[in-house]
Amino acid sequence: MSYLHPNNFQPKEDVSPFSETKPYFLLRFSKLSAHHDNYIKGINNEIAQKLLELLKPHGRIYITSERELEPQFEKYRINIDPHKMHHILYYTDLFIGDSQSMAMEAAVLGIPGIRFNDFVGKISVLNELENKYKLSIGIKSSEPDKLFNKVKELLSEKNIKQKWQARKEKLLKNKINVADFLVWFIENYPVSAKIMKQTPDYQYKFK
Image 1: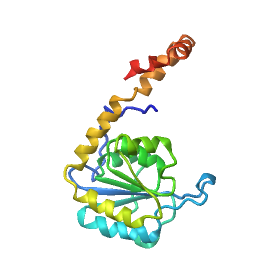
Image 2: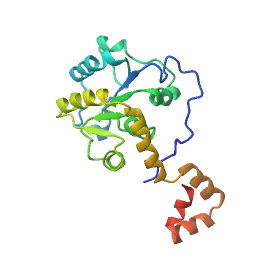
Image 3: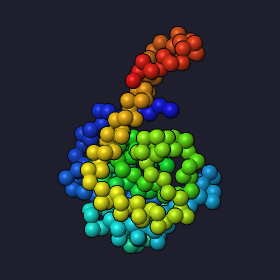
Image 4: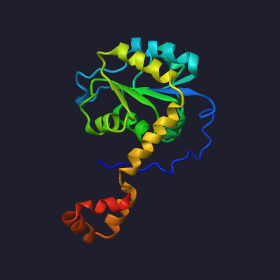
């Protein structure tokens, strides 16, 4: 599996108050209403409230949500342009959500993250990020106590972001730069297609 390389990712916009100097946490609540989400559970209101109680003493909390929020959560809703979300994710101290895509994005950025839903163990890219690179943590909805204990553990861990950044670098060293590969493939098509059919390992020239 190949990943886009965020080696040179540095937020260039002014995204204050979102910066590494002021600790904060980002929660993502998915709607889980698509056809493929049938019978899938994630973060409900009770679990969300418990997460807020655990996180409050350690920093600010922001929520990004596809679904309607209860009044007690609405004040935490983050109001930004969607295209700035990766800037916010880049600076967060801990990501917790029931979204697959944002869990993967956090992992590739080297941000400590937990996903809590019933897709855990069923998605190969996240399985690799979790089991091989230790860049994501998956917990099923039937194990809320495990979620709360893991949050406590991560909050108490020193230099956690540096550790996850080191794991991210290990990931990137093993993956090709998809952008460079696609530029080469398109600019040299159809010769590039023939090369890839005959020599699939040619892709590793784009690390």
